[in-house]
Image 1 (cartoon, helix red, strand yellow):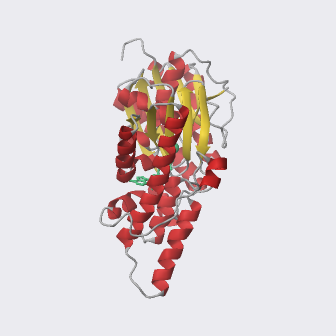
Image 2 (cartoon, protein in one colour):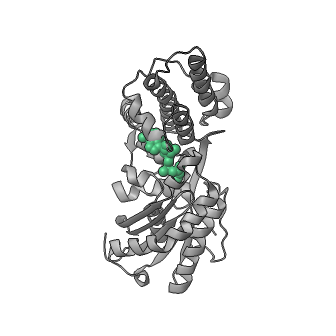
Image 3 (cartoon, protein in one colour):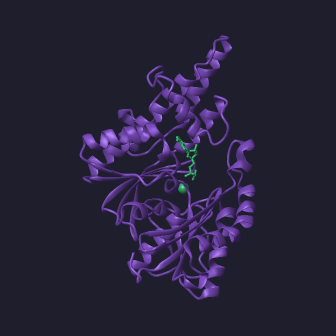
Length: 350
Ligand code: KG4
Ligand code: ZN
């Protein structure tokens, strides 16, 4: 960090986390997050209306917390950034409206940025400037994407994505089936350690030759989830005890195998030797271990930000904002809309 690096405040409200981060260049000064995850637990997934209301209540206190943590004032901020999409419309609107109010009040530029690009940019805070080109594997409750990142400020393109459930969603649904609370990913990760990963041969979605032709870098986890459900039902109907740890380990292995296989194949086939992992599922111990192994075998450098930067937060939005300011990119027009289905190639909403 130098005294000349821009001070950027980022706001994230695309799902159930109200995040406010402050960065100076590539240095993280504050990362305040308020999560409404407990309010969604009894529904087994994020309820958009509940999330929006929670964002409204948490927004001002979370900004205050970040400002205090960074030891700055709002008037010191050089630029604001906010997630403009993709995400839940009602949730996005709360962050976008708040960010516009701050930008207008303090007469500073505002960048309405892409949530997925922000998941990639956050690694600047952990490991410094991004190696480019890089391939990013983003896996969370809301997204599962493979991205080609040529320039994080203006050239990001999709290689593939899930055609049905997100990877985290599959973890959450299977966890629910096995009787664990939402979000279930960490529970599966934990109990899988007691089980055998090859106890049950669950399907690897979109890896057959004919699927690869059309969906080389795409994912599908819905068939896997159904297959786990059928397997468990059959056991229960027969009055047999469900071997929870084996089911969890075998299911997790199927997800990890497909994610790692496709990410490494993308790097090799596209001639890229840097892979970046992000999103809540990046916390999965088996996924990290498997990717480390396969990347090291293939001479690919794997970069994984620490877990609290992998899940949704405001620091990632601020990190992308700082990269945009540094690159001299134009800020958004203050009338820009929140775009629920924003495509990843749009890094900034004009
Ligand atoms: O990025 P995130 O906090 O929020 C969004 O979904 O955008 O990701 C949350 C997701 C949940 O589906 C959760 O079950 C999953 O990440 N997750 C995990 C682990 N920790 C969190 N999945 C597998 N293993 C974990 N250790
Ligand atoms: Zn996310």
